[in-house]
Length: 197
Image (tube, rainbow, N blue to C red; front, side, top):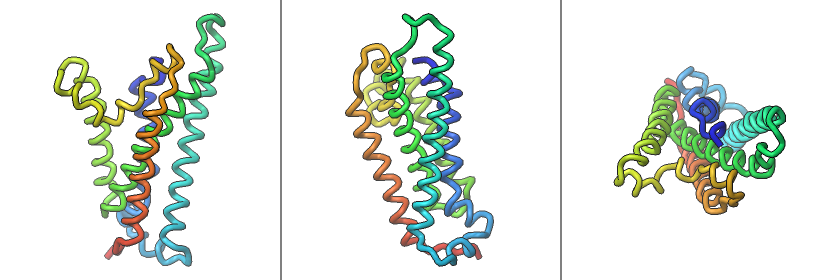
């Protein structure tokens, strides 16, 4: 399970979500092109759904490549030491929901901000806080007691890989957060007054 919790893997997945989800509207306002984008004969909801589709699809593609790499890499070890591909798929789905939650949080910040750097900074700061909190919880009891408030608490690949547990609760919490963050971002974007001047 180390490959699925390695800081480089998490950094790549989170960087994808933060980069993709901060583009509209904060990136457009920041560049001064929001006036052009939002005067097209399409609704804000359509623009939002297009951006969301790109984020969700490219996130799935990225994690699909990771799963493919894991499969081919596992062919180099003896058969008895290989993880069950179905369990790896459950881990990847869990990581995908976590990544889309981070992306939704970033999109929410993007709809509230006029600067892309500001929305990226907020998202990065919160993700970094969660990572440090997750580490600190191993050594500090108060941090461990409040760990259920941390997004990373709902991504635990080791029990899935070793015991074959189906993380229905983790899936449910992360799915609800995906709906809440992306839905909130859509509501704000539709109501917000956007002007680059």
